[in-house]
Image (cartoon, rainbow, N blue to C red):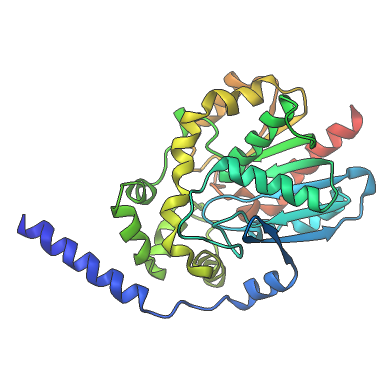
Length: 323
């Protein structure tokens, strides 16, 4: 009993120290990324977005949807290649992420993130779009797909390309740090202990051994996550893990039922979605394609292997133009 009391006191002291410690400013890279975009209002919240003009009018617009716990900057290494494929590349930070608002008294959900995506496209007067998503964003994309399949949206989805998302609860294994953050009360405290070294160690675990971000890149990720005091609400964002099981029939069903072209780009060294994912994907949605990248690529394929990622995505898009 005394040991647990000491641990609780120690954690409390650390939390107080961290909360009162000045947050690092945005890095120059993230500041430049912010300056290249703008904000729109979703209800009372400011949502960051960017629209990059592409060089292929026939390719139509693409909406990119990032993963947890990062931001639209995840797509920066493949942005040039996406611009060659499409007329426009739309990027945004979902609520609670990156440069967008991160309200504390808020219930975060995949459904709301899909609402935000639809609202942004409506603002931009985009009525038909390709979707390119990653991780958490894959689940948001599946909710958009479900709405499209059921004709409950005016948005027409032209194609969907997923990447390393935990779309099947059976093959998704959240990291130990994520599991801790989902524990009631404990998660709220642990979120306040987001020291850089701990972040670098745990975040680095989802990259390949030979494809780790550089020191400056780790700092970029970290500053975007902490921006707007994001460390306080990180545990609330993890509600998506339970949502995936709750809405499995709807979201996996949307993949099974859809008639639009769908492809998965997958880094097989992923500890969150290990290679058992491949056979499960092929069995569950056999009509959809999958590109398995080299063995050393892990959970962030668009960051770890941008050339290979773009090659796979370009091949998928070319198949669309042939049909």
